[in-house]
Image (cartoon, rainbow, N blue to C red; front, side, top):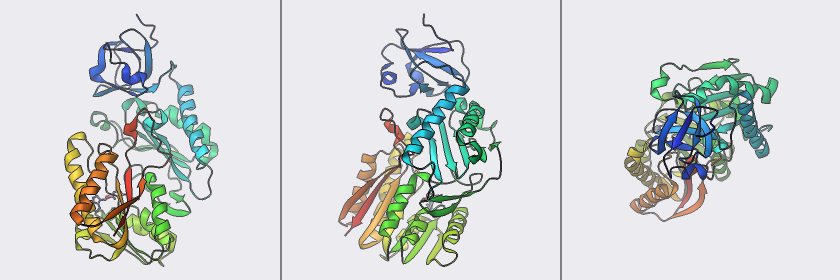
Length: 397
Ligand code: SAH
């Protein structure tokens, strides 16, 4: 008998190893017995076959049956969420982004990286966008919004719940996006001194790809006097930084008209019609095929080609094809900034795809920088799956 204070789960013999290494997922195949009839979203305690306590987390029937939020015994409740969110905030304060004249947009909570599997919170200049990936986290939204209010005080104007797209399909029908508190707040943010208009209600993900902040900055640093192509531009992040960095000309390409309208709005916001920039609604593959070596810098930041393990092979082929086009298209002596945000394609696989692309393009390529996600998207050393954004800055002879 264990001394559980919640419904509890007993693992099969030997299945406790990953939890002992602080990996926060319990797979359904590791479970021997479930006591107390937990419902999806309930907190459960997990024990080894020898009745040793291992952790506490949210239960949800599926391949990942428990997402652990604490490896020490806790009483779940407001105080617990308060202290977890406070930890996440203090970590960002240490990074210098919570009170920063030049940057007021950052990721406040990045799931497993913050010991909060299933939860994403992005902060946009006084508004928080809450995104639950498990029904358990979604149920905690009032407590978490309360914790945010307590931490930010009057600075926090709204909390918007955008979980409809991220939650398991069988629950999505009952969950619609909307404000947990406040509404219609300021929707303009500053990132490294650049202005961006954010639409978290209609936009992709939580509204903006915050994870590219440092890579955008790097592009800006190399853009002086250069002709730049920003493929998969979405809100025009790389384009704005390139222009600020003194690019002679920028072309922004995205297949979505809404994205291009957003990019145009952001270019106007920063340069008031004085930028040498053009936008095009087009397929980036086609655009690259037609370009004839006129660009000094090419950025390719596509959406995840593989959202599931089954799509891994075709994703790798996609990265190879895209990078072969970009490496072929760039001017001799030019730069390619290439990215993958597919979690299932790890850094080695991505590098392999780019190597094959360079071979196919028949160009000599040097790796200048290996790029990643910024520290407000931290990776738990015990959960390497949290590293999803990979990039390479290439010099192409
Ligand atoms: N670089 C952006 C984020 C890119 S998100 C930033 O810094 O904010 C990926 C974008 O690729 C989306 O806007 C999507 O509309 C676009 N996209 C998807 N498939 C595409 C294709 N085949 N050609 C061009 N754009 C595409």
